[in-house]
Image (cartoon, rainbow, N blue to C red; front, side):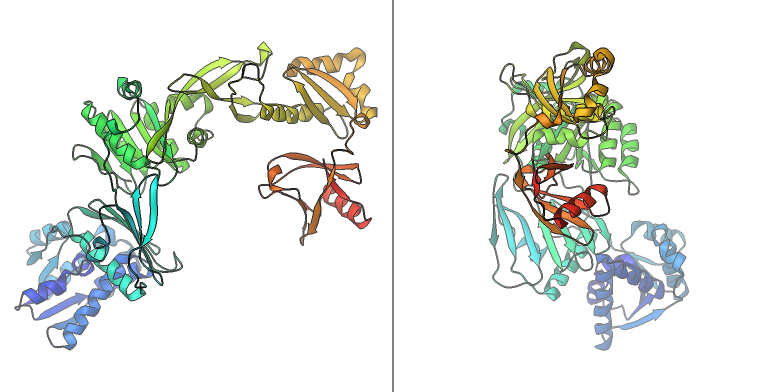
Amino acid sequence: MKVVPDTSVIVDGRVTNLVTEDEDIVEIIVPEAVVAELEAQANMGQETGASGLEELGVLRNMHEREEIKLTFKGERPSLNQIKMAEEGEIDALVREMAKDEEAVLVTSDSVQAKIARAKGIAIHYLPPEPEGDVKWISEYFEEDVMSVHLRVGTRPRAKRGTPGDLRIDVIDENVSEERELRQVAHEIVERTRRSPEGFIELDRGGATVVQLRDMRIVIARPPFSDGFEITAARPVAKIPLDSYRMSEALKERVTEKKRGVMLAGSPGAGKSTLAQAVAEYLLESKFVVKTMEKPRDLQVPDDITQYTDLDGSLENTADVLLLVRPDYTVFDEVRKTPDFKVFADMRLAGVGMVGVTHANRGIDALQRLIGRVELGMVPQVVDTIIFVENGEVSKVYDITFTVKVPAGMVEKDLARPVIEVKDFEDGKTEYEVYSYGEQVVVMPVKDTAGSVQEPLWEMAARFIEEDIGRYVHGRVVCEVNSSDSVTVYVPDHQIPGILGSGGKRIKSIEEDLGVHIDVRALDEREHSSELRGVDTSEEPDKIVLQIGPWMSGKTVDLFADGEYLTTATVGGDGSIKIRKNTQAGDMIMDALARGRNIQVG
């Protein structure tokens, strides 16, 4: 009997098994179209291509041992046919080959099998079959192991424990070799393609992501990574919502109406575990629940359908979900701008949304949404933030919207729309979010009655300096004295201009800004006791001033032996970098050439 295998059975390695089990098979005819498709996949760094070429190597060895006859026939497909492989171009060439050779077509592709039968071509269909655990990976997974990490040139390691109590242990003293890891990767892809509970989520450019039952496996290889690596992860615990420290009021909040909930936490904090618990709780509360995941790795009941991206786009998935009309959709994970926009669109369409996102603090989850969604719409998109830390719910925020004078301001005409971020348990406001000028401010609100936030003062000072600077030629320095009083220092000869005839200009500015302004000469502002020297160095096109990491993000004044030069902002590494071809750069270079000390104040 002659057989013609298609790409699907060569990739999953079942041709050799079939030949071994069936002695009637004497010749394997591999179409050049299949070879071209495997070569293209391998050149793109896809594990399926590498696995298929390894299977061809095994068949060649069997041919050399005279166990079978292996031949390659047919025309090499065109580049366009290879690109259209997913649309069935290569499959059509394989069917023609089987028909012309009067051979049996072997496939594990159900669509290929149906078309071949319809055309009267002899077919041997190998349906997906349940498989045991992947040998090389499963033997490392003990009860408390969350993930296994295999990398060429290193000893296998495992992450043990539960969220909040994790450790990394070496689980095998033998160093992993690339040949061994490639064999593991080949077996993983084979088992995934065979298993009805497995699917390949991603396979391109040196990275392959598969989901095999409850296990997510990532295979990375050069050039995507600097070495061959396999990481397998699985959930170690399935925790019901009742096991979390969540008040009954919070559970009622989620179920009383469709909400916009964001589950936030750092990697490994237990966000996905909580998302699974919330999904099951909503299902038990008689809601229709679906998930959006890429990759799909939440462990949820069969009653909850898990969707991934449709044609590479989660926007397409959202379009389908709106037709399905779920009560709640669990979105794991919301990371990139398109993800936040899809989340917002579905929420504003009336679907209850539970999003999972990375954040170091609860408020950071809200800040990730700001800028991606119009500020006034934020509370309608997300009204509840649940922050997870060490596997426990550590903070819950209630997001509301109001119009008020922000904390730290006193003038009634400064009232504006404000998003209040309140502690869900005690109802106290911890943050306020609002527009100030062209900036969006996320301002902590202190508990002490009457206290005024210094960060707000600093920002207000910069804003006032910019506003006064419109009327002044030269340096402007603003110092905030209280919530309704500031002192502005300008060059002595500029004071009459800023005051205006009869003080009209300064009164107009005070009314616009809502504060009392005391205008003084710069000479009155004594800097000498506050100044300190800074180290300077040169790069080809920049001057670097080392200010100190504790000043990161601060705006400071630069002086040369007490004489003001310029104002600059300290970078994240504690330094200020000024280009030499700028006015400020010329001034600093000139001061250094004269041997003057550069100071900061």
